[in-house]
Image 1 (cartoon, helix red, strand yellow):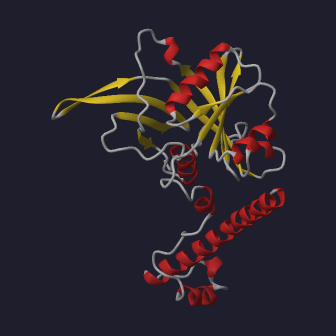
Image 2: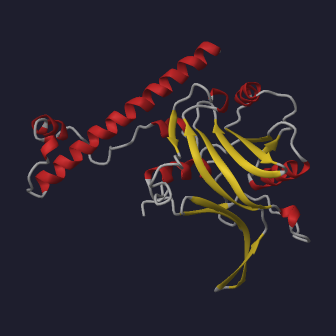
Length: 291
């Protein structure tokens, strides 16, 4: 079993490494095709290989670009089978972090919550893989305030690390009422860049496909690389008006790293993307949107 898992992991990493070279070759061919189509001069960096690229263009099928990628392997059952989510916390969680984990369990349909106890990360991941869990969610705290949120997709990754801020839990709002556990509709706003689409896939595949008559809506809205999470239910007051009611919790997510591996491979997995806050232009740049 361990040898098979190691082989599948190597095959996944090899496909991921080959994807970038295929994307670069496709970009060069697309630039050449546009130059020939518009009767413009061929770009200087493509002139030496222009004949070879033109010959390979004849064998490219229209609409077949980007069909195979590592995303196809990671989320090949997305939309076919419902995700199986496991939620846990850091060690020795406070009562407030336990309450936040309980609220997250209600946010994700069909999710299960597990007490961390003295279990190590490797044992948690192995147990999740054996039981067919598709995503492991871990929440961290600082002095009782939730500050970290990790999404580890199984069995091969990726693992996304988020900072939590401005957390308002349902327990903080008196007389809020019960929460619907129907499969929610999703609103993903502001994820227009390539990295934004990657983060959007990581988040939206945590939820199953909803029914058309579901009155539950979950929103992930990106603004300046801060992802606002909002949770509402709606009802039709009349044929032309809809009434929204926020049911909580609410918080903001800030992505700071994506690793090409599961949670226990933190020391060996390659880093797909990392936020560098101490560069000169860090305060000016946004990564999750193309604006």
